[in-house]
Image (cartoon, rainbow, N blue to C red; front, side, top):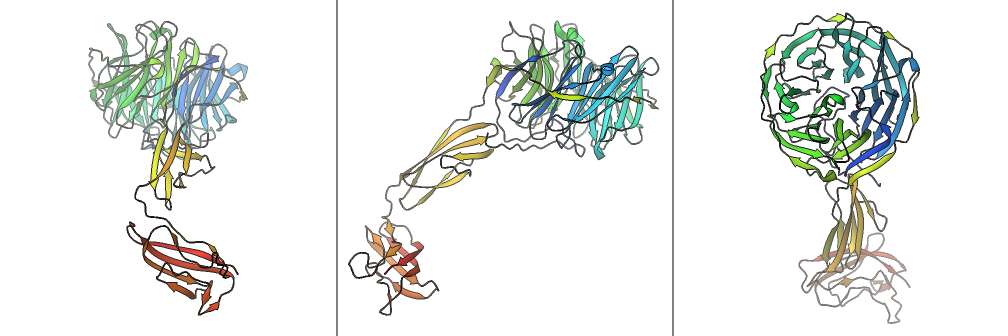
Length: 603
């Protein structure tokens, strides 16, 4: 590939953060469904994959097989091609069971969180990888009463890192917030809301430097410096489960997921103000319904804003068979479209794990295809992948929502750091294509018209084009052509090429060409003795001046039939290079043409 460029505009967030958010793009990328034959995806509660976007338009996927405790990290470039794949090996006593989260900072470094739990000992691991997947540092913390562990991470000002999850210090579940510096040193650790009812605890960094915590239908804002709770609220229904919230210009978007008697598991967008008070809810849609809902525990993980103000999430609609479903709704939560993908429902179960919005406006989705990790690239505007179906199926079901106060007493909490030695090694994930639908850019053909003496410009500029390869070796957008020449160029737009051909033809009614020789020999032999214009049609107006190399006027004439004989005041001038300035207009020419050039006098 001869070059690429992606221009991204991220929604206003905290300094140094990279998140899958608002996008402006110049890229074009194919749709595809690829499966990794060498990566078994654990169906059960612990096995789902995590994703994060990359600053240059690529993305990273991390997953852990809780049976073998193998963690795999896979990087894809901006065109969706596999860049590198690593396995991470941990000490036997603290082997991970789950990838908690993966995030990428503005420098392209990866922060990977994993968890170990079992018996009376639990631990959380945090590993920082460079852009090539090599380990920079690895840290771990553990406690006998640690509980299930950490579920979400994020970046704060001053390159700080936050981790949120559960702890279990008094026999019931408490939310936990840890603040670390960029080297992984634990700066503070506090526990918050306590309840015997548990959902995955998630959080997002806010523009004011605070954290918005969510555990199911409980919401609260925490000042990360003081550790104090700014506000808290309790949305009774239907906000079960813990889809990561989205901060809006005023308030937040939450996605709830719950069971009802008709459609099994459903989801609904809910809008709250900046204090977590209920404002409105949108259309309900089916999400993870059917036999797979509890068995594989593949609930919705996130919702993302689109450039046009709409929102998108990805789920699994399994009420009949395993269809992966991308759901788009507008600013009010009304359903816009649902895109169902499964290349062959009789052969495959395609179950969603996580997704990320790419700089070109497409989705990258980590999925489960019959127990193997699969990677999907999906175009939301014109989906063609594997015979994708676009439908609209809101659920005629309603539920009540009301606010309540959330009792909370923040308290300090302690974890013990554990020394671990983590290694990273290359591996082959076993890439196989199930569907691969390139976004085809049509070739282009342009005809240029001009007169024989004209210079024509073949301009292959195109919106989003980042590289050009001409047959003559030029790598610029435009090249000059003469009448009778052709120009062919291969143009790169995002990740796709198209061929651009320029042909030339002579215009009708062109003025006759007028040529001035660049050498003359005034030696009296009757051949090339005079310097003047050579034309095949009448010259109606004419003016010629000839200058020595020092700028002295040595000849001038207004008669095109009267050529210069190489003399100045009847004295022969020496062999040398002379400059000339000519102005003329021939029959049929619009306006006067000016020519400047050099003539060599040879004796």
